[in-house]
Length: 218
Image (cartoon, rainbow, N blue to C red; front, side):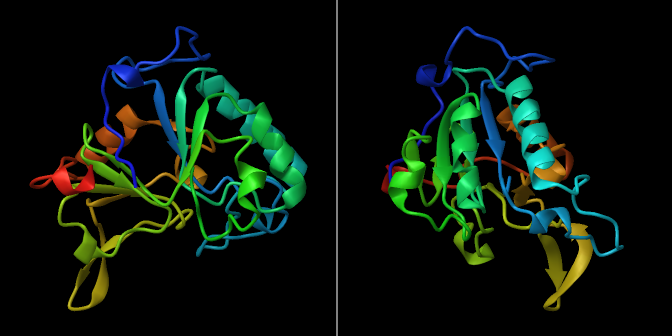
């Protein structure tokens, strides 16, 4: 799998998106688990019984997330979608309406033929390594034994939940700072800048950065 490094080539495009934009690495965005076209996700609830998403109709949900995406991301910005992008095949047509140079990291619900995704994504991968930021991105959180080289695993899959620290084999009430979830439920249903992900991670005690040599990942 090819490695992705942050360098001059990442500074893409003079066209700004609407709204407030951060300067440092603000042209790289992350998102996961949009579930476009999924009626069921509009019915899902959290552990406390409240709705997982504020919509009752999937078409309304899709249009709201498309609007938020395009208000956040400019046409030339990079977007890494960390999986479970479309649930209903009919919603694949949505993808051409989304701004950005998009890469898909496939999730467990990305089950359609490869050629269904390739018109909409520049690349489709199992994971992405960013050595400049010191992170590895995946759909499902990495097993902790695979964290050796990476200070931070940015992932999706968990929706409103987080990976928690464990003690004696049981989860505690403390977030594991080696992980950061970018599911839409945790990013105001819009892509989040890489800059903000790193800021959030450090605020939680995370230490993004490559741990040891990376030559084997080139």
